[in-house]
Amino acid sequence: MKSIFVFLFILFSFLGSAQEKTHYFKSHDGIKIAYSDQGNGYPVVLLHGFINTRKNWDKSDLKKVLLAKGYRVIAPDLRGNGESDKPQNDEAYQNSAELKDIIALIDHLNISSYKAVGYSRGAIILTKLLTMDHRIRKAVIGGVGADFTNPKWEIPELFAKAFSGEDELNDMTRGAVTYAKSINADLKSLSLQQQHQPKTTAAQCANIEIPILIISGKEDTTNGNREALQKLLPNSTLIYVKGDHNNTYKQANFGRMASQFIFKEKLR
Image 1 (cartoon, rainbow, N blue to C red):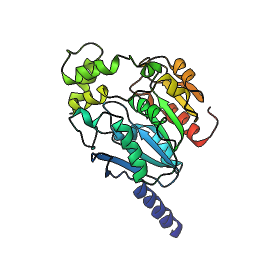
Image 2: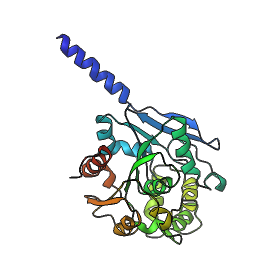
Image 3: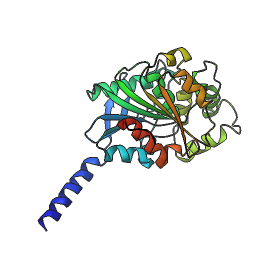
Image 4: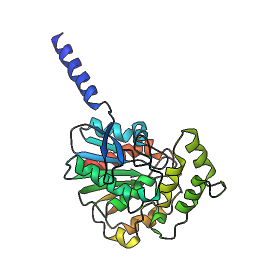
């Protein structure tokens, strides 16, 4: 009987320590950034996609596996999203402001090295972050191809104008704007995020030396060619798993492959 009480005490203590709590800090320009920080092991940072928040990772197998394996999982709400501040001016998103937020968060938490996972727009941000923060030891990039490395890529401007109301909605933008309205997301901020989205050139990609895993859903054809992106990143591996753009990161296979890569296990 005593052993049962000991087991239950340990179990509830673990569940209590793993429970998500919202933390805040003031970033480089005074903007308040919300984040969760769970677990006590080696840190892994999760970067969410467009019209998402850090809580979207709660729907993923990846976060559950990382916590179960004893990793420390840190997930910020990028500025303009979730419980972070949503500034309404261009200056708040210019000059890689979102990237500086992440770097400031890592400084704030006194982390000397970490691994990172980004999905969709979070992957675009993470790729640029790899050129700025050399504390990252491994990265998983999901849901993107090579289009974001093209300086003339037209999609960010197209979505920026759709979310600002400057352009009428079309077949490409209507679904995203409708969804954003349905969850009361801040359209002005979303427009500014697209307008000032960080850019990573092909030449900058070629200088990224850390191991990278590129994961794409088999039914996901958005944001360009995956094989082309792999060729741009010299130390990268490309795998395909089940899923389309909106649900791949939630899938068990995504979580399994990403976690095995992070754990230094053979991908299988």
